[in-house]
Each structure stands twice: as C-alpha cells, then as structure tokens.
Image (cartoon, rainbow, N blue to C red; front, top):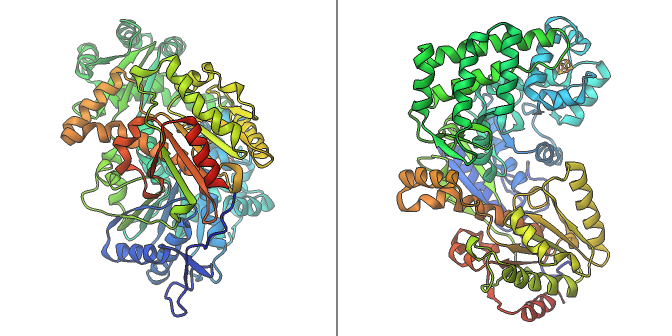
Length: 617
Ligand code: SF4
C-alpha cells in the first residue's frame, strides 16, 4: 500500500558543497544535517552513533560526507564494515551512482578466501574457512594452484570501483585468484569494504597489510557488532571432539598427553546441567601435571599445526583435534583473571564464553581517527556498551507520522511465568483477526522458537490465508524459498509469514511495497532464564551497577525487536503498522526508535481490526 502523501524531501542548494558526491536530485529530510554532522565528526576526530530508519539513505549519506576527506587527504582511507556480503554489495552499488569519483579514490571489496576461490575444491571443505585457508597455503607453497602461479607473472588492473562481481570478471578472464588479487589491491585501496571479522580478528587484520591511523571507520548495521565479536571470542570443546582428540593422539604417538582429556572429561561428565567451572581450578589441575598451562597449550598447537599441514600436503581436509584442544587451553590461559570470560560446562560440552566484547571493539575503534556506527535500531547506550569514552549520538527521521501506525496491546505477554495455553490463545485471536481481515503482507515475529511453538499449538495454522512458518531446522535454501513464496502471495491477496526475532526474515531481508505492511511482535526476544544469563547479569551489574541488565540483555532484545518491526517501512512512500503484543514493551518505549514508539493502546481484537482497516483504507 503506497501513501499518496507528500514526500519529505529537501531541495538541494545549488552551491551545496556536497553536490559533487550526492547523486540524487533532492535530500531526504535530515540527510543534509547528517552529512554535515559526519563531516564535523571527521574534522574533530570523534565517534558518531547514527540511528536512522530504513530507506533514509544511510549509505549515500556517509559516502557523501566522507569522500571529500579521502579526496583531500591522500593518506586517509575509509574502511566500511558490514555483516553480510549482500550489504558489502550495496555500498558498491551506491558508489557506482556517483559520477566523476576523483581519480585518487578507488574502492575494493574483500571477502573470505573460500568465497572468492575459483579453484575446483570440495564445496564442503570450503565451508570450513580455517581448514580451507591451510589447504590453500599448502597448495600455493607446492605450486599446485594454477590461479596463484599465474598471478606471479600477471599484473592485474582492477576497475576503480571494484565489487566482487567486477573482481571475479577480471580475474576469471586472466585465470588468476580473485582473493589474492583483492588482497594485493587492499593496501592501495582508499575505500575498503569488508565483513566485521576482517577487523575483529587480529590475524586477518594483519593480512590487510594497510595503515589505518588517518582513516575513518564505518560500521554498518552496528547493532550486530557486539554479538558477532562475542561469537568470535567463544572457544568450545565437546565430548565427541575429545574422543577424536584421543584417537589423534594415539595416531601421532603422543599418548602421554591423554591425561588432559581425562581430566576435562571428568569435569564435563559431572552432571548434564550447564554449570560454571572455576578457570583457576582447571588451570591448577592441569599445571599440577605439566607445570605451565601456556606451554602445554603451545605444544599442542604446534603438534596440531604439523598434523594440519601434513593432511593439507596430501590434499585432505586439514583439521586437527589436538590443535583445537591446544587453542582452547590457550584461551583459558589468556582469559585467566578476566571476569568477562566465563568457563562453563554442561550437556557434553565445555566452553569459554565472552560476556563483554567491549575491549575488542574499543581496540578496533581506537585504530581510526574517526568512526561512524550506524543502524536503524541502536540508541546512545551503544557507545557505553562497546566501551567508548566519548561519542556523539544522533537520531534522524524522514518518515511522516501519519504513514505509521504503532499499537501496543497491553493485555497479553509472553513473560516466562505467563506462558500458558490460554495466553497463546488470546495472542492468536489478535493475529487471526488481523490476518483474516486485512489483505496484505503480514509478518508475525515471535520472541523465540518456544513462543512460536506456543502460537502453533494455539492453532495459528488455521488462519484462512497462505501462511509460511519458519522452522529452526530449515536449511538456508528452504528458508529463502519460504520468504520468496510468502512475498509472491503477499502481493496477490495477502499472506502471513511467521518467524522469530533475530531470524533471517526479521533482519536483512527487504519487503518493499505491500510485501509486509503489518508486523505483529509476539513478546520481547529476551533470552531464556539460565545459569549463563544469571552470570552474565552479575557481570554487567558489576560493570554498570543498577543499569546492569539493560546492558546485559535488554538492549539487544529491543534492538532485535525493532529490526523486526522495521520490516514494514523500506522507503518514504511506504505505509506500515506495528503491533506490539506484549504489555512489557511499555517499560522500554524510550529505547525504541522515535518512529516505532507505540502511539495507541488497544485491548480488544475487534478494535485492532477496526484501527488497522481504517489506517489502510
Ligand atoms: S590461491 Fe586462490 S584460487 Fe588458489 S586455492 Fe587459494 S584461494 Fe583458491
């Protein structure tokens, strides 16, 4: 459903200093102010947190503001970090719209080696990036990769704006490796577009081989960064993996180290439930027999490296369980005395979990002279969460209030204590009346798969509308198919998509036009109560006092919910409705983006139907 209402545009001043880079005729409301603010941030060498709704044009806003610096200062670079390859590509597409990019500015996208590799290697092997990287190194050393060999004699010229498509085209024509060409191109590129892990993982950052001290960092969809940094920091071993380690030790003739496995298994097998293990306790047990934990870890890593290289030389998948155990023990050693890393065991596993990635993120931000973290959902608390000492926060909005209807339903909740069949029944009444009476695309986003199960049991499938339901075991391909089918049906009479907050459809998927006009949020995606959550809360209470739980889990849950709610608006002409089916949203209104804050309260399904019908008529 499109609104015929006046769009919120701002006339472009003829003498505007940014005109050279801004490829559109008019600025959206707030865009010029945001460009000026970013320019100031760069001049003052500061950090900016920018919240702007989808369709605002965040990418072109930041490009317009940063390119003049790149043109003026030949030693400056712009590093643009995205979560997905699709987002990398969006930056390239916007750049291509700018006419006459100065000759001294060139851009390159670098993706994972396994993604860019053109050699015919087993696809399964390419899925394990670490193993593939070792295999690739061995092939290069032995001269077994023709695409690498040829690169030594060929000199490749890349286009000024080089996305993955262009990189592949150029390299395939000359039969050379796109990854190696991109890697060589990065030190000379002025604009580098890459995924988060290029900066978060020091070993990958080294391969970029580039100076960053006079550079600008842009973190796209920054609400994802803390979670991804946390995932990168996690180290895990499993009972199954330890059994494999034991067999590998036998094969390698190093049975004298098998006692390590026995000691760890003894701890893991002490009960099925998740429990905290004292890191010092494990260290002492190990050091009683070996003297030094770090030395023990280094020995195992060394042995594992030899095993991996030998397998790679023979063309196999270079995986070593001994190496994995060594890395786990090294992580244990490195995180001793650091409260943000906690050792857990349970359910046949032992893992080191990082509760707080601010040390890693802070280190990254400090490498640059200025940074811009942008997202449709983050709020000013992001700065404190990631450990920035000072920063500016700006929320911009170009949407008209009359194009958005945001409703709170206060007599339902998915609060853990209240999850009863009657409650799910009540929630289903609201969903059904909307789905059966309004013929458009409707997204239902639940707090978790447990809540999704609850509404399934309450009969959500019986809605008389095509309905597509996400399943946690869906393959990416099946999930993609469901989304595409849903979109097709949404445009021809309406359909319902049921997924979870934080799932594939609720983030990163665009639903333009009438593909999703209504989003119903069932619950708030708080994590389930567990010992891990309890420990995490304790940690954040130590760091932030009475605001501890805000940083521990409330922020990320509200950001996830806002992402899902934001699916209904993808541009200035969209009209959309958001329905919060959980009374607890009342407590967190101030954390929601301005345009998503509920403005109406409704307590009856019939009343909800009437409001929505009126809004869309
Ligand atoms: S050098 Fe390039 S083409 Fe060759 S195996 Fe490695 S990534 Fe693949």
